[in-house]
Amino acid sequence: MKTILVKEIAEHLDATLYGSAEAGFDAVFIDSRTVTEESLFIGIKGEHFNGNEHYLDAFRNGANVAVVEDVEITEVPEGKAVLKVSSTYRAILDLAYYYRKMLDLKIIGITGSTGKTSTKDILHGMLSEKYKVFKTSGNYNNELGLPLMIFSLDDSYDYAILEMGMSAPLEIHNLARVAQPDIAVITNIGLSHIEYLGSQENILKAKMEITDFFGSDSLLVLNGDDEYLRTVENKPYRVLYGGLNRGDYIARNINIAEDYVEFSVNKSKDIIRLDIPGKHNVQNGILCYIVARELGIKEEELSHVHILKSSMRMDVIHLDHLTIINDCYNANPDSTKAAIDYLSNFKGRKVAVIGTMKELGEEALAAHESVAYYARNKEIDQFIAVGEYMEEMSAVYGEGAVGFRTFEEAENHMHQHLKLDDIVLIKASRGMYFERFIPVLEEFGGKR
Image 1: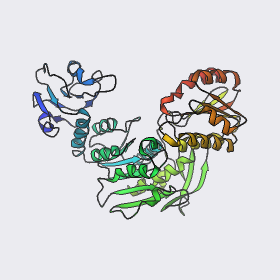
Image 2 (image 1 turned 45 degrees about the vertical axis):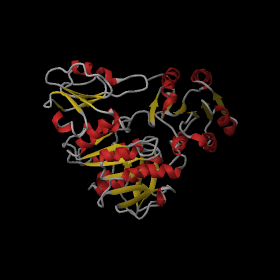
Image 3 (image 1 turned 135 degrees about the vertical axis):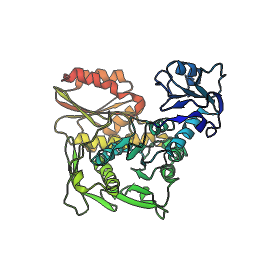
Image 4 (image 1 turned 60 degrees about the vertical axis):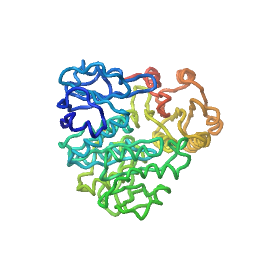
């Protein structure tokens, strides 16, 4: 991060200054325990913790500047500064917006109901063949996380790929205001967060907020196979579509292997190989292909794309007597069906351990039943439903299905009924903490 002085931002943040206007910082933190020397600490108030009360701890740990709200400023160490604002949530967005304007690089924003992280990882792999590229770490894709990613940037990067998530209207608008993306990718319009947004039409409107600060030279890349995204037209910026069946760019000659996918594009004979599994990543890959080609990557440079894959997303763990597909970072109907597709490609006895998919509102029951029906048609050998809809999912799946309300009940079943050399998929929403099954499975399968 470039160095910024307090006197440069106090007015921009509409802040009251205590201490030195000459105090500077070259990093931003929201945890007083992890600040570095000459950094800025922003106090965030959560449900069970108020970071604003710890600004003096941040100073003791090396911070130069603190941004706080609704606390009494009792002291400011010499040479340091406190900026008191009406809202630290607003301040972190405003500060990130200020810093974004200092940067001389292009930003690619990625959003969608599913596939954001995989698309980010694939595009990072493609662009890294030629450029220095930054990508969002972990799940830093909300109104706190994305600003922290902005603060991690400097002009040594050619491109930054930033993931943008949301659960309500205007969240992506606020992220787009900060990031000012030059290119945006929308992977699909599914059921994620429909509990809060009411309909897929409203989800489309919310996702399209990523273009709210586009100029005439901006580019929007869309999934041509998505019925909602296909309605996007007559925009004052460029729009390109990619898909498996429809689009300006269509994936052909698809080959799905255990740990990679291959495809060609349109009439080209050149094969693109991505070191990431699952047919859904061909769809994600074609969107990334469009961006990469637009940014000067040659087709021959994509013959074998090495991808630094994010954790708990189609991670295949080979044990002595068991194979685990760890895709438990999050879940919704589309991503769960994609994971089941991937499981079905393996040879051997296949077990799907499927947990609750959250934030689906009135669509929740039908969505869970549709997943069970989908798995039944994929000839999964055993379907283990865990959580709120375990009875309904088991009933739809029929013979070969069992349901459990709790993790402990499912764990006990696994100990008794898994077989040597099974292939086990674990998939659920983040709040289910399905990674708890990994040690259970490693104990059974013999960790290598």
